[in-house]
Amino acid sequence: MSTKKVFDPKHKSKEISEGAHREAARAMLRSMGLDDEALNRPFIGMEIM
Image 1: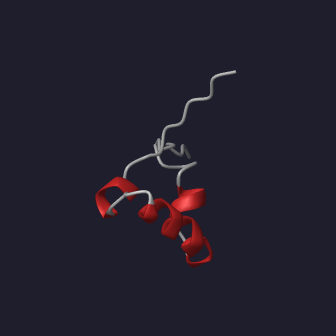
Image 2: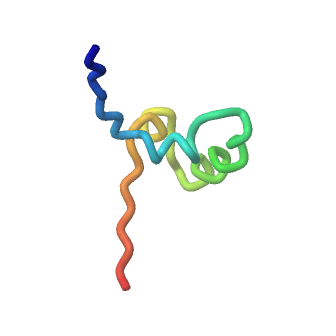
Image 3: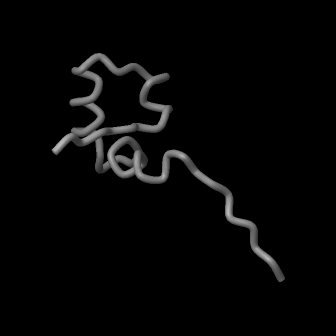
């Protein structure tokens, strides 16, 4: 039996944007101007060292 993995582009973003225990994180993101549409998209970050 073969199981097919489906790519989820939000697999890391869900850690800060979903769940009742992440209300404070969502409040911070909303205070920075993100709306529902922006929160539903994957978060992409870059680090420059």
